[in-house]
Image (cartoon, rainbow, N blue to C red; front, side, top):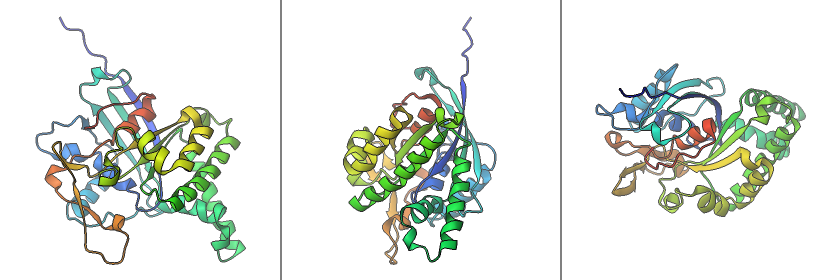
Length: 296
């Protein structure tokens, strides 16, 4: 008689942050992609509270090749997923992940820069004070959780300097609150999103060495020195590629209307939607163990 397999389930409560248009909401929607196929041979299943919000985004925006709307400051939903990992006997720590993910507006990230890095851009001391209070409120939300995910997409020299200043400020706040239980047990996943792009696809297998260390050198060194084992680096693509033997990105750009290309990216083939690397950072946040499977 076969022994019953013990199902190991790990809860993960995280907030997901990053600049505007870094793909945070699309990333969360992509967790549902495997379940959209009638014959689901994928390794991930997800579902739970408020998933209908993401289902609406999938059916009315992603599937219709429309831009995913930005997350408004007043609509920062706390999505809940149950992610089951098939063939989980290969992984030591978990068979299931109970995920609660707070989708924070990209405006939150930008406000840190405005309020504390470049306050001269604000019109008045009153505006600066209001913005600083908003940022403090945002931090208070973050400090209730011990799992943070940052999504980045850009790596130009100027962006490295900007990221460095924001993360330096955040690291200072982490140090100031080091006695909090959430900070003592903190894990931070830093993710290079949209890695289907040809110029960085080759760096996806070792994103720490081949993407962050090279392209965001100053930011990378700061995070490694200040957060040490609390931080890990990942690459993912919510849209993925067209197939195992067809590495072309499963996205296209709409005609140039004067906006940045990242705002014009759309899913090319809905029926062939296979996100890449979307579970790896979540699994590490929950277990501290790297999940080496490029098809998840």
